[in-house]
Length: 123
Image (cartoon, rainbow, N blue to C red; front, side, top):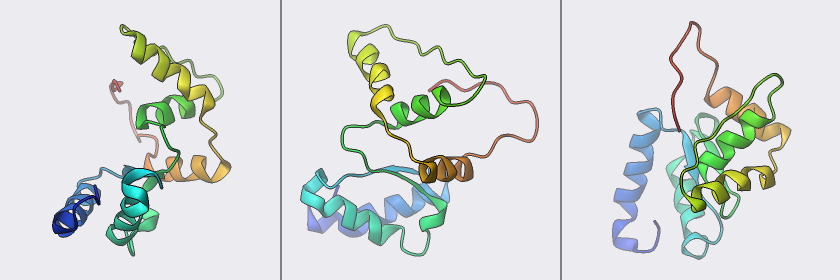
């Protein structure tokens, strides 16, 4: 993303469509495209910042953010499936994710609890 100027309009359109479809977790970091990805994301979410949750920690996956959030909830136990060594390492990486109170508030806003019983989703 943001590595080919000819694709910029398509990439912005894709990000905006994703937000429209409820895909509100966006992974970006200064290291992607030498900072170009963050600029592209900034343009794509202009006027919509409150609708998205940005993951900006380099090397942190959305799954690690989700697991880090779950593990910091009172009375909740996570049992992540790990059948490959690289997945075990990824799961362990969630302990290094430093979620701030703002991150928690953004996640709670982006992913509110359901109003009724829902089947559990697998990540």
